[in-house]
Image (cartoon, rainbow, N blue to C red):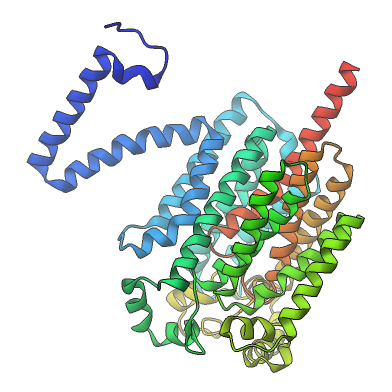
Length: 482
């Protein structure tokens, strides 16, 4: 039997490979017998973990894919009863990507990724978040530490994405993975709706009166699929459906377009299971931008049909709880929860105006309750991504964040019209649509605080820049060849 082998896949067929397998199996058995099942599992985890760590550093697209998978599956794994700081694991995975980025940046420097309006506003946003540590109105510095860790690492991911995603093939891989993961979430949502929520999850919610008040509406449990909550689930379904709609307009094979259309209808229907009113208005808002950017007779016909269907759904008499909740999203004056949010925003306005840097990162929500439970902001429900920014980072932070959203959307629209390559143009349109949808959705709810949508937000910004860069490269090559 030959000792040489051409690839790793042929290693088990060699004498050396067979010997290694025997040694590993015997060693694992001995460790398990001596140290117990925990020791054996730790060895097994190390055997898998070390190659994964190496792969994330050496092969960035593999690393980005791992982060996307973990971001989607994080809360599903948590609900399985895994008593492990999975959020810290995800932070560590992002840290590995950053490490790989710095290593490659040293050998193949590319400082252009830090230039331009988008990179500049993102650096300003990171800098302001760090500056919040000296906020004189902050109730807790520990809340800042816990909050800025996630924000800083997440935002830096933009530069990693722009640097490492350097081919059309890479974009295809990541968007296919996005749609596969979103489809898995869709299927699990149908399981929750048609078969039922897992008994262990249901018991956990029923034991918490607050969870019951938020999740049990009109005799019907709101669905959350594999995500943290119904809001995150519904927003992911909307942006994934918007991604499908955008891709359908591009130069794809007919069978792929058929699959994308099926995905769109399944995802939008699953979105209704969440009972999240804020998500319902995002679809028509996204379609309006889609019709404006991709103006043509065919698109206008599609938009007219879509508008007619939405109008029928808004006004048709029904007893279906999900459809009734959908209809109420377009009648905010009749929605009691909308009135409560509006009053809360009115109540907090004087505080925002008198605190230019806000109450400090982490002043509201979980970290506020943990580190400053008796503060005014700890009990304040922001109920909106923009309100949270204004409350925690003041009107200065809100201004910077609004500039960030404006610049990335402006960049997406400009690049869409400048890009010549049809496939890259399609990807740029899709990411611009995703960002616009998250921008609108960040007002009624917090669209960018939980995984995976916060990762997808910066991935979308990066792909917009990458598509333009790749298109310029292709155009220069064509001009040189001609």
